[in-house]
Length: 126
Image (cartoon, rainbow, N blue to C red; front, top):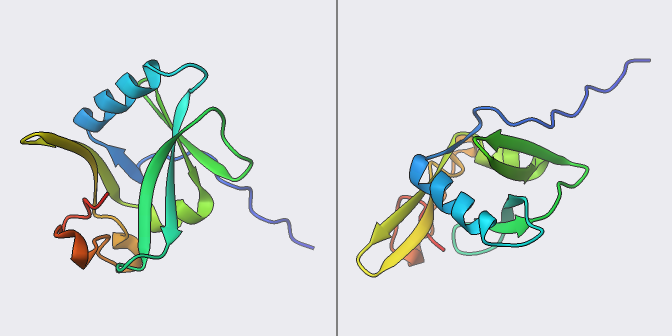
């Protein structure tokens, strides 16, 4: 009888948070009570097949991998992590707007991470 491999609950270099995104996420977390991290998620649907996003979180779930980087904590469940390996999260300000951008989204699975109807090929749909 063989033992199952242990679940890897630590994210190292699978997801890269660029300095602008790191600073903005820290700013948003610090402004909220009882929030200590950001959950990154992937869900089905949309014209590109998969969508991604972030939300505040107060604690990890049992199946989350955790990335801790200079006071920033990200929670990513195992399924989302398999689609986001190699992604770079950035924060971009353009004109009157600003948004988080996922670069190289779904690169590990051969997808583009973008949605044709969104007008962005860099995976910056929101």
